[in-house]
Length: 237
Ligand code: ADP
Ligand code: UDP
Image 1 (cartoon, rainbow, N blue to C red):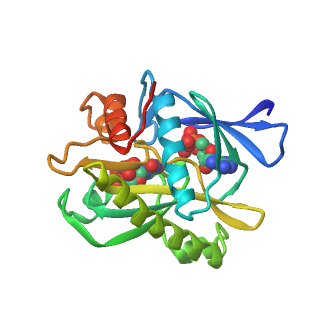
Image 2: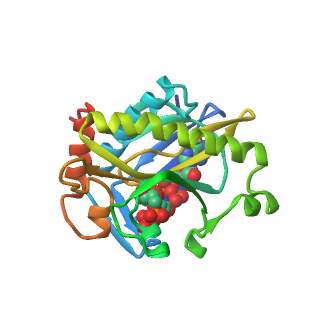
Image 3: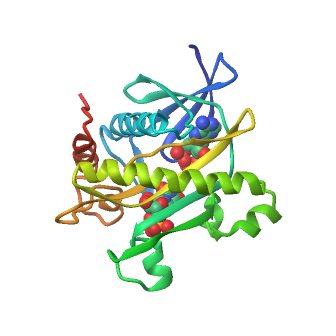
């Protein structure tokens, strides 16, 4: 497969077109950002760790029946994926309260969210990714009603698969964000599943093993991502 021009450079990844119109290459950068790009840093090994973490989780999801864009690892920092027509939407499920739900609703970090909640956010950096609902999505044409239902169904299905996977490694899946797109008319899971886009806590100590280590200046950011990966059975070197 031939890597051609950069289609898009995001905050964490670059997207390259290839000689196959249906395939893209995702390049995972070492760059990390939080608070709408107000806090940025370069973290050695992060691109490699996230690329391998994502490949591992996407393969588990695919095997469990979730349609994903993931095709293959190409190199330490690159993966081949199906080219999707992305919905400009983030789907968030929460099992425990953390992050923006605590700020918005005044609930205490760590309390159970039972049953788990589902939230949509609009991907729009200039607006700070505002929370939206299904009416906004349909009225402004960000996705059709059928795709909205499918995104919800798949995001909740991912919760059951990944909660169990993380629990096997002694970890709690606190919350996570997914992005979907259309591939030949089908709603498919795209983007990434890495500690950059979810919260993972040690089951006993509740030590944070995700991007909150960067957001909150706790240190050992990439080292903690690797701990989480190894506990799932991943190797990084
Ligand atoms: P951001 O755009 O938020 O800065 P990234 O740095 O992760 O985020 O950029 C990756 C971009 O690639 C995102 O906009 C994401 O929606 C998009 N993307 C992810 N997977 C695919 C795919 N399979 N097809 C097309 N675009 C994708
Ligand atoms: N998330 C993400 N990208 C975003 C916003 C959130 O990956 O642009 C993830 C985040 O890492 C967490 C979950 O979605 O795992 C819920 O995030 P929250 O709404 O609590 O926002 P935060 O306080 O993390 O900005």
